[in-house]
Image (tube, rainbow, N blue to C red; front, side, top):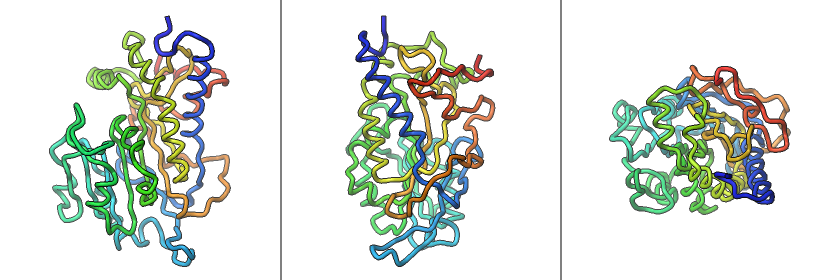
Length: 326
């Protein structure tokens, strides 16, 4: 019996079409950043940030750099969602780039950075959501619109980092275009954790290898993945309308190569990092076929790395898992 995709060729084809759309949108870089660096941790918690010059007014007369030596010290603000026990990214933006940092995480009591640099890094025990209120199992949340109005209304350069374990989809779907238009740089980790958060925790606790044990497959979670994927594809495509994607990094965490339901050999990334810059800030120019991946690093250095070849598009020949996974 099919667990995630209802019986019927047309439904299976539609689900695989959605999978292909998602994978294409994730892997298709649309901007070739000429001046980028890795900020934060050497592995999990580090991100690639673009420092190319940007235009800042309607006449395209004033140009400033998104980085060291530019204008960030004159009004850069970072809103960072999802801190846990690692805010090296936030600390570096505060110390090396001169940003005022607001950290949000309702699952922890504080952060190392806010204790080390209390004049520049501010921790808030709430998260990001589709509306203000309490999110079950998470805690107090508020919208991106409200947080920008409260903490970044005067920001000249606004960066947003989001890593909130699948809650990003509802929050982004509820975010209006006018709010997205205020963000200069967006770094986000997109998740496909529907119904499997407890599996992820169990694999981490047991230090299981980076594979997906068949005995932990849950038909209900598979069905939820298939059901929600079209809306998530739409949300990602809306982000692409506002931003160019200049870097993609496939997280190689335990179980991050999630088998797509009832499609042997095909997978969907359970966690993938995207670095974006707002389209009206930079001039798009042709991107080379050879991408510089030197700034990316495995989130888990003890597990086999993942890349776009680990997630073949429907219609391509399925690829065997890395040898270390067997």
